[in-house]
Amino acid sequence: MTHPDPGARNHASPGTDRLPAGLTAEQAQAVIHGTGPLLLLAGPGAGKTRTLTHRAAYLLASGRAQPWEILAVTFSVRAAGELRLRLADLLGETVARGVTAATFHSVCARLLREHAGVFGRTERYSIYDQADMRRVIEWLLSDIQRAEIQRTLADYGLPASAEVLAEISRAKNALLSSDAYEHSATHPGAPLIAAVWRECEFERRRSNAMDFDDLLAFAVRLLGEHPHRLAWLRQRWRWIVADEFQDTSHAQRRSSTCSPAPTGTCASAVTTTRLFTHGALPTRSTSSASESATPATPRSCSAGTSAHAPRSSMPPPGASATTSSGRRRR
Image (spheres, rainbow, N blue to C red):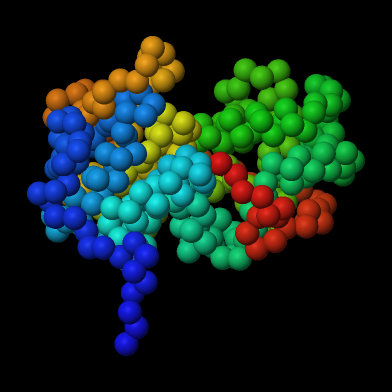
């Protein structure tokens, strides 16, 4: 028989009667909120992350949720690590390990590894970072066999690869397809950028790879185009808590609001520093019953993408099984 390490975080989940202790009245109200959307508005240092972790603990202690039914997501790797540590301090290491706490990109990457075949990849797909994608774009712009790109280069000139990548990234995070972007963008080089985008998608598919923006856009598309997969996720993660929600893109917001089951909730914390610059505000919780500004959970999500098959192919830029350069992204 093994004995637990006395220094490890192994304590049991706190009882529901102890959870509101040390919280403000509004924070406690958010912690014990029932089902439906919940939005927390506060300045920096006001206790938003603490409130969200107490919310997760309350769901477990009250019997409303099991650890594997809770998904805690945030914007950066650092913030996700902080979430995991706080959950372990509050719930104990054993219980906290059952809660999925990660970045949006990490959660989408896990989801897509289970369903990679939908997008022409295998579960061992690589993830290209920005440096990889700039090299791919530079190669495509210089490849004389890319007739569509060469034709638009003659019309619009040669842009920097970083500018092309940034424009494609913005469009992907707005959940646009290359065709939709080409017809709606105001960028003067939109036809060229759309042509490069189409060729990039073909090369990533050929190389069994995605970039970081693909993780978000494809995950939203998966949930929107395959209702049975969405239904499965809603049973798997009935409760979602999202920290630093103001830093998320449109694609990240859609991925988080697609998943909660009707009987669960999506609780989001927003730092209002950009709106209120004169000190921290007390944490304010709003629910769908009292605040029209609270985001409603949509019934479905969708995003369009398109693929194009050029005649030549590209050697992979040295990608590994996770990220091609080993670097981590926010």
